[in-house]
Amino acid sequence: MTSTTGGPRLRADAERNRQRIIAGAGELIRERGPDAPMEELAQRSGVGVGTLYRRFPDRHRLVREVAVDMFRRAVDAATTAVAAQPQGWSALVCLIRFCGEPEIGALSGALRGWLAEHRDDDAELRGLTATWLGHFESVVHKAQSEGAMRTDIDGVEVLRLISLVTCRMPELPAKANREATARYLDVIIDGLRG
Image 1 (spheres, helix red, strand yellow):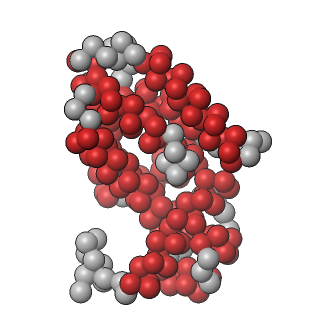
Image 2 (tube, one colour; image 1 turned 180 degrees about the vertical axis):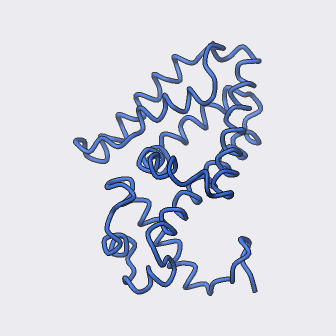
Image 3 (cartoon, helix red, strand yellow; image 1 turned 45 degrees about the vertical axis):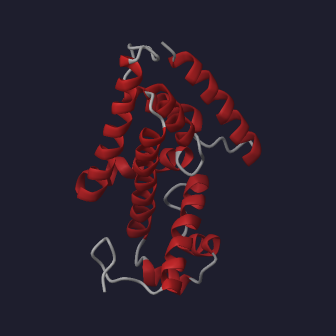
């Protein structure tokens, strides 16, 4: 049996462990960056070090899978927003708020340097990135063509702007980080209106 990615299909408990590792690693990477110790990644995930290394023999593979998971969720969110929101502006607001979630915004910021170093050599990551950016740009163009959004900024610039306010601020507790990010995203949304 194979999984949708072409590799062997995992038993249900092994797949649960794999997902726990990816989620726990994502949390720790948001806080400490992609160089966080593997032992701490295992501890955060609630699995033993042996289980971690069975699933991900080295840091690169684990960080890569966290990045792939992040982009897959972003592509899914874009597809859902476009399907659920008939107007470009409404879809864009959904995507901006999605980007403001720590699981995406702060993780994306923490992975920025790693992605710059490794994405060009990874066809899947390049493809997922291109798909995500294509969806986001399409929503921006639709909002602009409707007259709902200013036309002097493009999708990549909007994403850069979002990244400025979604990076984790270690001096703030998690709740304050979320509240600050939500407030700043509201300001961005108001500033983007056409």
